[in-house]
Image 1 (cartoon, rainbow, N blue to C red):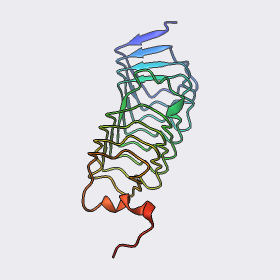
Image 2 (cartoon, rainbow, N blue to C red; image 1 turned 135 degrees about the horizontal axis):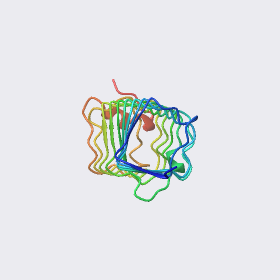
Image 3 (cartoon, rainbow, N blue to C red; image 1 turned 180 degrees about the horizontal axis):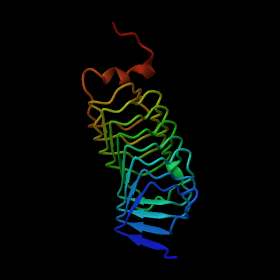
Length: 186
C-alpha cells in the first residue's frame, strides 16, 4: 500500500476503520470521520463536513489545510507539529479545543463556534474572527496584533495580558475588552 496520496478525493470514510497513509498532498476529504491521526502530513488538503471530534493529533502536520463545516470538538492542536502549521476554518465547531502556544498568524476563523477554546500563549497576529462565538474562550498572553474581531461576539479579552495593538473591534463588541476590569457600564 502506498504511503503517499496526491490530488485524490476521499468520501464517506471512517478512518478509525481504514488506515491513514503517511502523507496527503492536495487531497479532499468529504464526510469522513477521524479518530487517531498520529504523525500524518496533510499539505494543501481540504476537509468538508468531516468529524475529528476528540481525535488525537500527535505529531500531525497541517500545512495550508482548509476545514469547512467540520466538527473539531476537543482537539489539541498544540500536539501538532509546529513547523509550517497553518489552516483556516469556516462554519466549524471547535468547542473545547486548544491551540496552547501555537504559532498560527493569519488564521481565518469564519462563522465558527469557538466556545471554551484555549488560545493561551498563541501567536495569532493578523488573524480574523469573522462572525465567531468566543464565549468563554481563553485569551492569555496572546499576540493579537492586527487581528480582526469586528464581527466576533461573546469574547472577553484582557488588553493588559495580551498584545492587542492595531487589533480591530466594533463599537458594539468592544465591551469584551473591559470584562476583566470588573466595571459596570450603563
